[in-house]
Image (cartoon, rainbow, N blue to C red; front, side, top):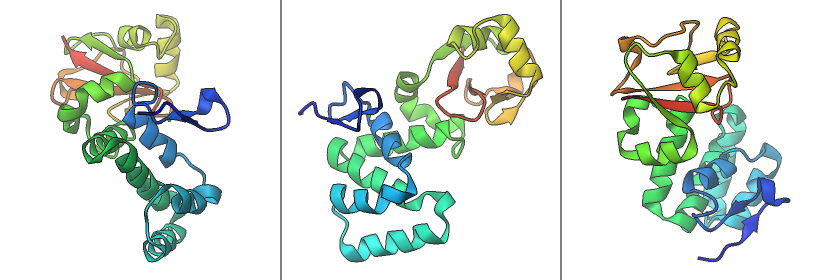
Length: 192
C-alpha cells in the first residue's frame, strides 16, 4: 500500500499505510473531523450517492452532537482503505474507548486496544496509584493521588477516589482507567 499522509502536518497526519496509522487511529481521525468540513469530506472521500449523503446530512443536522456524519464518513473511508473487518474492529475499539461499549465487550479486539493505549497488569486488589504511574497517566504516585482526590480518574467510566482496585471493578478480568475526559488518556488494566 502507498504511504501517503493526509493532513496539514506530519504530526497530525493520517497515513494510508496501516504500519504508520492504525485502522483505529484512521477511523478516529474521521470521527474527530469538525462539522464545517464533514459534508465536503463525505463528497470527496466516500462513495455515498447524493441521495445517501443528503439523508446522512439531514440526520446529522438534526443532532450534530451525535456526530452521525462523522461516524458514517469514518466507516465508509476506513472500509475503503482497510476493509470491512478492520473497520469493524476500529469501530469497536473506539466504542470501548469512548464508553459506548463496556470493556467486557473488547475480547475480540484486545490486541487492537493494547496497540492504542498503554496496558498494565495488576491483581484484584492492586494499587490504582501504581497502575496510573506504570501506564504513564500519572508521573508519580503523588500526582496519581492528587488526580484521584481531585476526581480526575475514572474506572470503567465511573469516577473514583479509591487508591486500590476492588474485584467488582473488573469486567472479564480487565478495567479501563481514564485521566480526565479524553479517551486518548486511557489505559487498559488486566489481571495478572
